[in-house]
Structure formats: structure tokens, C-alpha cells
Image (cartoon, rainbow, N blue to C red):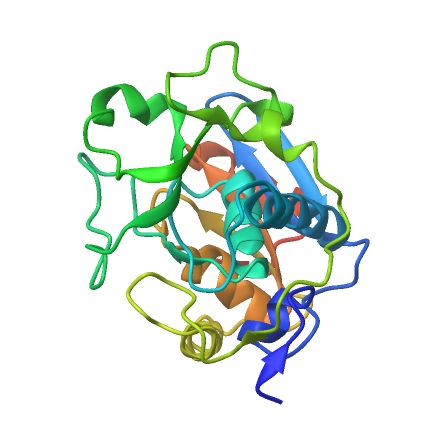
Length: 257
């Protein structure tokens, strides 16, 4: 079947369910702040649905729209990406952890409709952030706390997204041949790459994958490949090598990336 309902984001890439709805799907650690946030498939899906609502209902975006996601690996980044894809919005998701803004890739000279950028990187990049009609800033704070101060011209993603429902409405049908990224790469092509990487990583359904966020920043590795395999993720920012062994035991990790 060439088209699939937006509610089934995983099926756009891999054609199936990603996990049991109430079991942990994404567990996020930041060893610099002590944060631990755990989301089930249902909870992450709720955040994705809210994001899709923000983009589709709040911004009028959908299939053919384009967004730059200038964020590091994070549970909120997963929500933004899955939400954008749920609304049919093609995204740029190159790494942003190195100095300077990433290139958006082929086709990036066309106008962008939305940008999502991390607050702690915005001061250095303010003049270089791509122009867009809708600009959102994320504090990436523990517990999804809102920003105390929002830069001019931006909206606080966390404050805005909470106004939308956790149930994904039926949007226009999204085809697997539609662009999932701004360079024109389709949902089907990203899905094939994710499945290939899942096989390379020897991921299987039920696996629990620990990912060092600093070493694997592209979401095809820390998000799409595990989804393709039906695995769950323990995503670790600022990973302290001294805690790896205990975390593997505590989180019942079966694979390390």
C-alpha cells in the first residue's frame, strides 16, 4: 500500500509497530545534569502527536513543508522529528553539536517553513539560523520545563506544544515516496537505511540499545534504526564512562552503540 495514515509514523519507515505501547521506548540520561526521563511508546507518541498538531493546526504546515531541526540527540528531538514526519513535514536533521551551523543539504536553498533550535546554541548562531516563518526554541531542560526568557522572534516549543492533543488527528495521507528530509530523501529510503543499520548493529525486537549521544548524533542511528528493529533506546548525553557498567545492568541493556 503506497499511502499510510499519519498516525502510523513507524509504518512510513518500517511497516510495523515499534514496541509494546506501555513499555519503555526511549530512556534519556544527561550525566551532566543528572536527568533521567523515560518515555513509553505511548508517551513518546503523545509528544509526537502534540508536535504534529502544532505544525499542522498551529502553523498550517503539511506535506511539502520543510523544517530545520537543529537539535542534539534528546527525547524532545525525537518528539520534534516524529511529530514533523507525522504531519508530512520534510526535515533537515544534520548534526548540530560541532561548531557552526550544519549545511542543510541539497535543496536547502528553498525556503524553510519552520526551524527548531536549542537555546544553549542560539546566542552564537542568532544571525545564522535559517529564516523561516515559524521559529521555535527548545531549552531541553529536565522535565520539559519552559524557558524563563524567550528570544525575540522565537516561540518556546514546550509552552506551545502543550496546547495540542496527544491523539493524532487524521491528516492528509502521506506516501512512502514523499520527502522525509529536505534533500528529497523519501520515507521509504530512510526506512531502508534504518533497517540496514539495524541489521549492521545486530538489533532485534526487544533489544535495549545504549547509545552515546556524543558519538552517534544522526537520528537515523539513535532513533530510526532502533525503531526499525523494534528495539528500545537508552540515550546518554555527556556519558560518564564510570557509570556505563552499572547503567547497562540497571537498564537491562543488550546492545551498546
